[in-house]
Amino acid sequence: MSSDWVIRAEGLGKSFPVYRKAHHRLMQMLAPGPENRWYEEFDALRGVDLEIHRGETVGIVGRNGSGKSTLLQMICGTLTPSRGDVQVRGRIAALLELGAGFNPEFTGRENVFLNGTVLGLTNAEIEARFDDIAAFADIGPFMEQPVKTYSSGMYVRLAFAVAINVTPEVLVVDEALSVGDEAFQRKCFAKINEIRDNGATILFVSHSAGTVIDLCDRAILLDAGELLTQGAPKHVVSLYQKLVYAPADRTDAIRSEIRRGLALADAGSPAAAAAADAAAPQDALPLAAADPTSFWEEGLVPASTILYETKGARIGDPRLETPDGRRVNVVSTGGEYVYRYRVVAERSLVGVRCGMMIKTKTGIDVAGTATAAEGDCIPVVEAGSTIEVAFRFRCALASGTYFLNAGVLAREAEGEDYVDRQIDVAMFRVLPSRLVLTGLVDLDFEASAAVA
Image 1 (cartoon, rainbow, N blue to C red):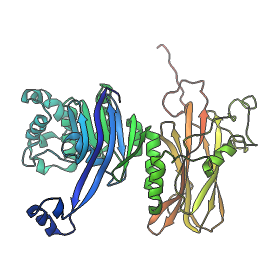
Image 2 (image 1 turned 45 degrees about the vertical axis):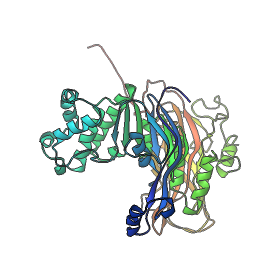
Image 3 (image 1 turned 30 degrees about the vertical axis):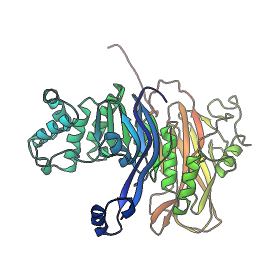
Image 4 (image 1 turned 90 degrees about the horizontal axis):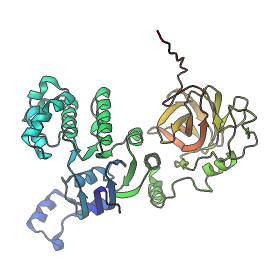
């Protein structure tokens, strides 16, 4: 293990007593001991080994009840482990739940001093930072009002303002940024980036895939109290989403695949077979000399394809083509292209529509669309039928490598749901433009500069 760790957990576990009847809790208090146990133990977290290094930003993802908040509370010291050990080096500031640590009878100002003291600051240090805290919270005269009169947005503004202004060496955020308006959320993320650039360690829990991918250096997947995997945010988030959308009877099998590192499309899978077919398509443009702006490049095939569990349809043959039908995977800004795939219905489907998404190599959504708006779909697709899907677009992307997703939605008894979804089924590269472009898209700039 590296010596520059800031957070280290070894064999960490937490169990809670679950009483079948209300009076069993009283019986346990009156007659404690292992021979008179009136409860069953629920393992909220078990066997977690974890090491987070100085300056890392780590995202934790997982379904509800997976143990994310329990892990954070033990790291922050507000919950005692049942098994194992957790150590933290440095001052830690945490946003574990809305208003935690606030006295509702105290004013905002009084709670700033209360929270600051809990986080290890002296009164003089808090006084010196108070103006910055008040400016960031931006709650105006409510700073002098009791916290019990605050809205949820005002709560989180004040809590976050205190947490980030104590100069933490470790910042822990548990979904708190889902509260507040967009302008405040943007301000929070800008401050988090500033804290990260200053060398602090950040532990971040979110259900937002884009936020984890964009903000974090590494991601951890928890499920049913177990750390299933950790690694690159894009990869971990894709596995998390595969688990979320899996049928209930396939969850255990998928957990096992993720645990063993087998959740990527294997060599015999339909996606891998499609990728192999696409590696040498007969209608490809094999040489740049044939068309220097759009051609096929051997080896430009994704190794990160993830298949969701099929629920009645199967996507096949995903490909990028020129308008005249030739397959390409190297394209140019400004060119016209068509993303195609085929869908085979394995059962009768109602209210069908198909979608696509273009993502960066780090997993950030760039652009996506669907064949119809919800409610304006293909009414019925009979079992055995094939749907040919096409998305024509003008490439407005800056140079770089991009990945394509595909998904099929149908109307089920409980609402619209994916009947098949595939991640990173194809990839393509955009050639450099002769213009100087930064960012992700080409907005067809006309740039000029002249001495007045």
